[in-house]
Amino acid sequence: MKSPVVLIVEDNAAMRELLTNRLKTEDIEVRAAPDMATGLAELRTGDINLLLLDLLLGPEAGKSGADLVRQARLDNTTNINSLPIVVLSDWLDPAAVLGEVLSADQYDYFHKPSTSLDTIAQHIKQKLHGQTPAR
Picture 1 (tube, rainbow, N blue to C red):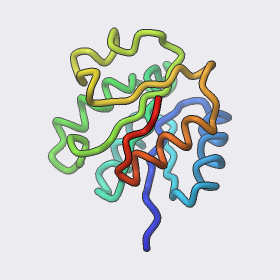
Picture 2: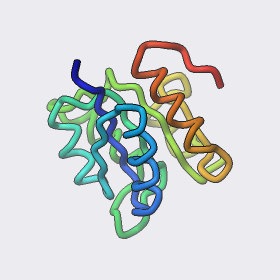
Picture 3: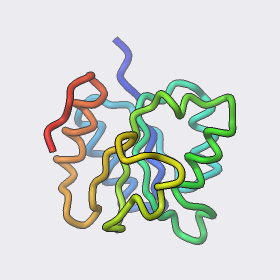
Picture 4: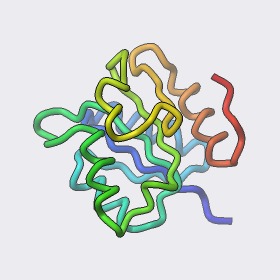
């Protein structure tokens, strides 16, 4: 059986590596993108099962996570509308950034500094296996 594929879009290289290494311990295939353009290219492959998205991509990364979702929706070559989305950010109010792109029931949110990697990994694993994760 093929492992599920998670796309991590995170501009912080250290955080990207931590998330990648932790998800791999759950037998999850990980694709990692440091910016919006790379994230969109990965989404266009059509084999992504879940999007783990940093909300505020740094200025060198070009755009925000909301911009990525908006562009992916305009792009008929992605499956963004059927993907589970997990948002990981320093922002305490993700709706302030995502409100015009996603409604609160279309994504799960974790506050970056206060959520453990284990909690995020278990949540993603449950989402990928069709279970309703406990929060």
